Length: 258
Image (cartoon, rainbow, N blue to C red; front, top):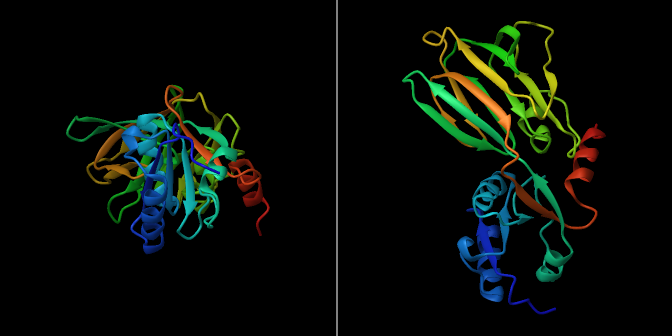
């Protein structure tokens, strides 16, 4: 099958040797272009690199087809030699909407970032973090004592959220997972499932004594005083999956793994 002239492909690769070799071969065979000129991105690497690629592609509003050259590859398609153009033509799209994070730090500076997986708060020293949790303007938890807390999208619910014992969310569900990280008090609080139109605010308590960092995927800010988060429907990124191997099936499989 020949390549359509309209299908300009940008090949992005992690530093993994297998990914680098594949990128060189694909770029030569299909006359790969820079992402600014591309109609589609093929990302070669693992889930971490795929997340970086999705953030880049979101800026240019082009879809991303991942090929796993890493370990888990939850967001990726299998890597195998075959007709790449045919795979791209048959791939099924899935739109993902990011979380918008607004941070105010101890220097009274304001920062913004987007997260496709989760926004996380972490203690920065040996002392536990103390965090107030506000949902839609109402205080829901006056004081969480823990290593931190996170808010995850459905796509991100199988990532760090799952490691922190948070719930797996169906990929099309209008929900967000609010999950504590190693909670100490309240001892029995395991988190909450919120509607995706909720606005969540975290406020740092005893900030001087217990400094906290906020992270949106891989963007980190230190010494935060407050963090506001909501789902940003004005932006999205489109993932492409081989038929029968989409995110819906992968998330469902995760729920039945023992």
